[in-house]
Length: 331
Image (cartoon, rainbow, N blue to C red; front, top):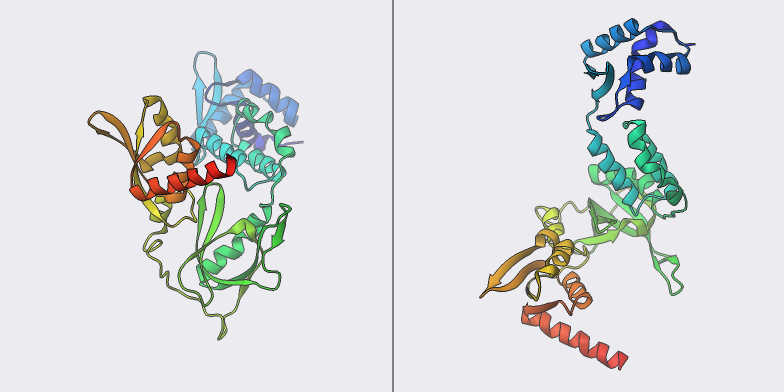
């Protein structure tokens, strides 16, 4: 049984669950819910007094003066639409299995009203059958961050797919030893920006392909390399990300394509985003694109009937060679 001194907190909990920008809770409903849920007999006057107390304490509660109801207005660092955005991000993540996603969504939903939570209930069943190999990544993330923060080397096994599509340790008798610098996210995957021990330059390694991750102490054969000797990532690795759709492709090109119809602009901007810019040459509709070569070729070969590559000539020659090989393979 709750004591009456808890009434302000219980009213806050009810308003938190039962109200949002479109739904108010009347004094009559507050009286009823306090009785049904907490066994407290409270009259309407006491409800009004406790709401006023909460307002004085800095809790923002709006009153509907026409109907006499209340709603919780704003008491969180995140707005309701921002919470929904975070929930959508969890639901669309490749790295979170169904059970973990449901748990995260429910914790985020705690900041929504029961009306707003209805938007996500139909998704739970689908999430329960969604599998993932990425949960360990979140469990090990603290190890990576500690190593980066304290400039420590880490060791791990690295996996790849075999001929049967099964993940296998790429080198069973070998552990990679690296100096870690940054964690980047691109195209649904996390990458560790690192320097492999006793090698030059920077490597980008898929973190979901790692296992047996450990921080190691330095010795004469394992010394942390504090310098990123790679112009792609110095001084700011995010400039590299801005030009690359496929993060492991190093060659960035500036290409120009011709569009036969304005209806095809959307696909270009959906794929290349801010990397694409419209330009007109003698009223011809063209688009200039700055991106990694592999992604550009992938896009053109998927949509070759819609776009014509105008430059550079090196890319045109590569497309011709690919088409010649495809012609030979299929005809």
